[in-house]
Amino acid sequence: MTGASSTHLVLIPSYNTGSRVLETVAEARRFWEPVWVVVDGSDDGSDDALVRMAGGDRGLRVLIRDVNGGKGAAVLDGLREANAAGFTHALTMDADGQHAAAAIRDFMALSAVHPEAMILGVPVFAADAPRLRVVGRRISNGWADLETLWQGIGDSLFGFRVYPIAPLLAVMQRTRWMRRFDFDPEAAVRLCWRGVPMINRPAPVRYFRREEGGVSHFRYTRDNALLTLMHTRLMLGFLMRLPLLLARRFRSSRR
Image (cartoon, rainbow, N blue to C red; front, side):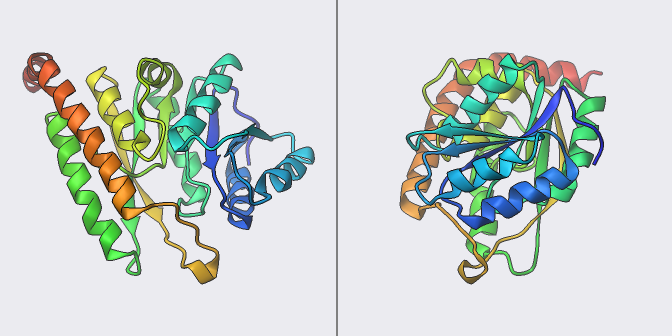
């Protein structure tokens, strides 16, 4: 691993992921420094284990939220701290080991060349990926395409991304939404509306079975209802912004 970055950090929100988060953090630390973990009200003992881990690693910082607020809430706390510390970009990745830490350097390097852009991971699924997850995400992707007039969001739900911190903070602090499972798709759409460029990059994803230590907090009914509500809000916002988005598409087509 190279020396610590003063501009780009890895940000990992975690909720009750058990020992899997320790493996994820160790892998991330192999490829990047610094790595920050935001423990989102976990009660499985992983917070204590992470604090002990950070005690012997100057490149690891652990932030602890007393109450579970959701992925977006954890990311927002991390972004605020990172911004105050002078960081400009954050790579978000899941704590459950689904995202490949080996891709961190490639994404960070691309962000360094294009600091104005968000670098969006596009999942490369293995043959054993759950079909419901693979097919079901096409619905959300279709809505995100419509809401942005097909500006180029490769995958709206994949959480392995590099964000410019300032515009993402500006978006999140203006709304009470984007705090739970709705964070990833809404962040991509709203940053697109702000004119933040998007660069898509393939990234492998792995789904662990329960017997392998896999952890999933996705609840089919609850979280699909949350996504439906989110896309309803976004469609209303899209209609309000439609003239601006059409003008932007027209200008880009003439270049």
